[in-house]
Image 1 (cartoon, rainbow, N blue to C red):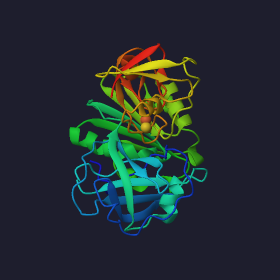
Image 2 (tube, protein in one colour):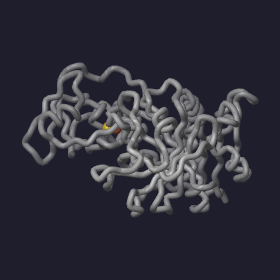
Image 3 (cartoon, rainbow, N blue to C red):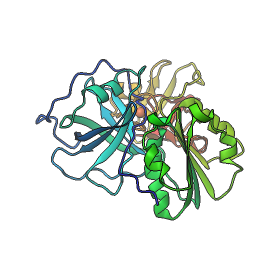
Image 4 (cartoon, rainbow, N blue to C red):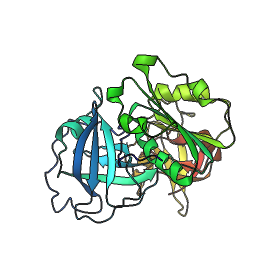
Length: 345
Ligand code: FES
């Protein structure tokens, strides 16, 4: 039974560009207090360059429910957002926990959290949303690279609660930078910590092994790490392997370079989408209310449904199965292959 102190790690920020952040107010102003505001109730360093944040409602009321794999958006002082996986206990309705890795070459989100955000400060948030849901299985393989351990932590607890068999491979460059490493080292035989400075790269194909129909694999980590896991699981059927990425994947050119139309279900309006203009922007310009956050196809805020037409998926959320279904669409980045798409907003 895993018994980690409630903890949460953030996924790496994936939001829009960020100016150097200003300090949040030490206490929420009247206008800031509301359903979309959290107050930092605790902050501690849990590994080199990793801080663990505890966040609560300013008035102490309960928070929206979440499930393992979910994330919240933190709104930075400049209005841009960063996505962080919730790593605490979903049964605690009053506290969210995230962990944030300082990104030396990041664009300011992690620096703001590390250097400026203090206990008592208010911060706006969105979500939670879950693009990385744990589906029932008899057996799970979990693989985490670095700060990618954060969405995996609540999954371990959930797998325990389900009575499922599970194993975790947690890879890091060195032990000092592996958040929750000490706790996980004591969590039983199912956990393997792999320190690459000591042992080189993990042998992912060997650890993953052959496909088993009773096993689902969940992995989170840097892009090259995910690519290596993908290469080790090419023989696995669609739907058995799920990835959570830190950042938007590098996208190739759109499938079409010409304009297309979007029909909004329930209206008689056709929205013209020019090359270089996102569907979300075109819809917004046409008067439709489209909520966006990351604007990079990472957070899931702008999710809509496709009723007709063939989408050109350019997000970093859907897996191959979901793309094949062609029903979910993220208009901040995705486009059309066909002359027309019909969307349900
Ligand atoms: S706004 Fe984040 S996925 Fe579209």
